[in-house]
Amino acid sequence: MKHSIELIVRDYELDAQGIVNNANYQHYLEHARHEFLTSKGIDFVKLHQEGQDLVVTRIEIDYKSPLKSRDRFTVSLEIEQEGMLKIVFNQQIIRVSDNKVVVNAKVTGVSLKNGRPNRPDDLLKLMK
Figure 1: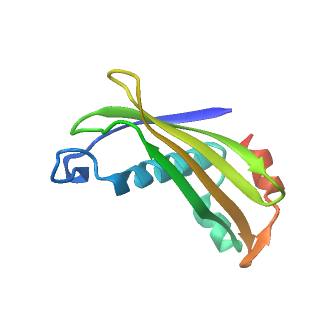
Figure 2: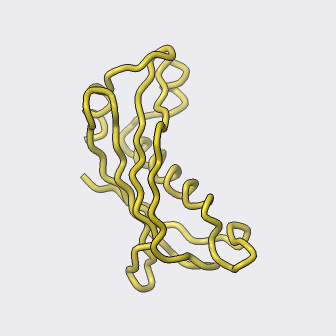
């Protein structure tokens, strides 16, 4: 199952070189994950209030091509389970104008219930 959103680069996200600062790509990736959860009826804040948290434990990012001011781009994701506890979001950022891959990322997370690792089975069912 693939999910994607479209965004546009804002000028304040650029560095002195006139390209998107590398840290902003993590914001784009996170925003897409949160939008995905919302699209599946999963309320991130409500989960926390109920004692369940989705926590990123590892991020691997390969930067392929820079984004510049006003570039339109899509952020897509696919999910998979790794082992009993991990949820993996395989994500990609693609520039719309030329369909060029900007970023490939693997974001690994776990579900915590009251601060302890918890099998994400119920959440994964909602996500698929």
